[in-house]
Image (cartoon, rainbow, N blue to C red; front, side):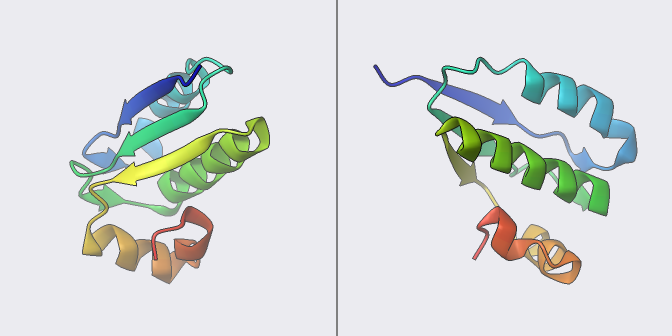
Length: 92
């Protein structure tokens, strides 16, 4: 049986948003095999936000789950590139 979860990121992926975001990520059941992550509304990024997403993606992959990105803007790709995390995130 295929199960999926959806995660819509906030407008800011910055330090102040991390506590809520990490709690939301941790609430996704471990039996989910695909997580759809919508970043379309996110316009402000910092390194902590990108690192949290990299860690979350790694955790999903270790569980054998897929991570599918939606709404990744050119701005998000540029910030990830500057941080050296674009490849880690799969935002090619």
